[in-house]
Length: 183
Ligand code: IMP
Ligand code: MG
Image (cartoon, rainbow, N blue to C red; front, side, top):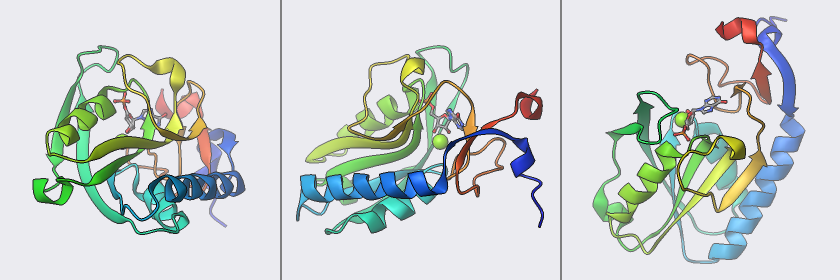
């Protein structure tokens, strides 16, 4: 068996089994909160796509799905970091809807603060945020998630959709990258 990816991983923070159980709980919580309101889940590409696929199937209630793409650039240490919206959502799909933004990880918060404000301009009934991981201690701007899979330590993590240089998204667990991989 080729295990070339796994050797780059230091610690496994969240195993496949742990993730499955937690995503099931999140789905049940969303189903219970929204009932038959048919929320529109908007995933932030690319990092959210695996989480989104599992979360959707864990929601036993009507839901719709769409995606947008955004990339933050510049120095992330600055609170004034800019976000580039590279794929938007048509305004008429959002108007009057209960939107849940779905993202892989909340880090400085720059991306989701921007995206929540952007969504607000499209006339939704409500906007909430669901993140798989929350690096609470890294927050630079005022934004909070309404649904959080796991609080994540301040380490660079990969897997379950999260990448380093477009790799490791396909790992079934969340692991920290060995420092020698990115140094
Ligand atoms: P924020 O705007 O600083 O909150 O950045 C969020 C984005 O940074 C996420 O969507 C990820 O693409 C990326 N990111 C932050 N921390 C990590 C990590 O530990 N692993 C992989 N990507 C990360
Ligand atoms: Mg991302």
